[in-house]
Image 1: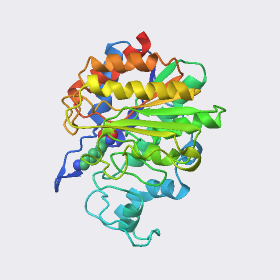
Image 2: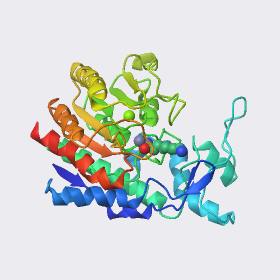
Image 3: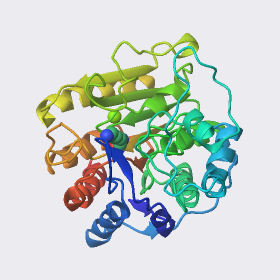
Image 4: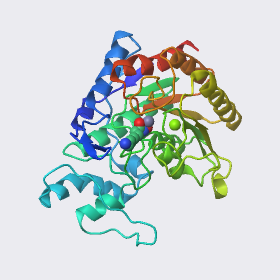
Length: 342
Ligand code: OKS
Ligand code: MG
Ligand code: ZN
C-alpha cells in the first residue's frame, strides 16, 4: 500500500494544550507522524509520496467559506491584536445567546470552535492545508485504481465540523475524501471511524444525507470527549435517517468486545454497497494510550486491518488520533499490513 506524507505537518507545533486547568505540552505532536512514517519505511509497506496541491475547492465542498477564511487569517489576526500567547478560544455562544460572527478575534475563535484544548499558532494553517492535500492525494490514488492508500494526515480531522475546529482537528480530511469520491461520480461512500473518539464532525457533515454512510465506534461520550455528540440514538435525520450509526463502549473494552461492533459496522457497510470506503484511523484505542480507555493490543490492529480488507472495497485510510508515540507506528502500520494480507 502506498503512503502519502507531507513534511509540512511539522508546521503544526503548538506549545500548549489546555488540560486540567493548566497548559501542557500537546499530545498531538509532530513525533506522532514521524514515528508512523519511520515504521512505514522500516516495514517497506510501499512507496511514500508527497501530496499534490489541490487548492481549497475540495476543502470548501465540506467546510464553509467563512470558516476557511477564519483559519487562514486567525494567527495573523491574533498577533495583530497583540496577544502574548497562542490563540485559544475562551468564550462561546452559550444557550440563548446570539450565533452571529463577532469582529474581534476572541469572539471569532469562540464562534468557530467547540472546545478549548486546541491552540492555534504560526504554521497551523499550512499544516492543516497540507494534511487535506495528503488526504486528497490518497483519494486520487484510489480513484485511479489503487486498491487502498494510507493518508498519513497530521493534523487529524474527524472532529472538525463544516465550520468548527476542536479536538486537535481543523479540516475534516475523511469527509473531504468522501465528498471528493462523490464529486467524481461515486454514488455512495461509507466512512468508518475506528478512532477511540466519536467522529462528531464527520457525523454532523453528513447527518442529513443518505449518500454517505457514517459509522463510528468510540468511548461513551457521557464519559469522554467530545461529550455533546456520539450517542447511539443519533441515527441521521431527514434523507439521512438510518445512515449514521454510533457504537458506544465503556472503559476497559478489549478487542474481543470492540470487534463485535466492528463486525456490526462491516456488515452494515457491505449491505450499503458503497463505491468506496474511507477509514478514519485512530489508534488511541490502544491499551497504553495516555488519554483513552479501551484495551486493544498491538496484534489486534492486524485483525482490524484484515477485517477491513475482507470488505474488498477501494479504501482510503486517513490518520486520526493515537498518543502512545512509542507504539503508534507499529499499531497504525499493523492495520495496513493486515489489510494488505486480506
Ligand atoms: C480534553 C481532551 C481532548 C481530547 C481530544 C481528542 C483528540 C482525539 N482534555 N480525537 O480523535 O484523539
Ligand atoms: Mg470513532
Ligand atoms: Zn481520538
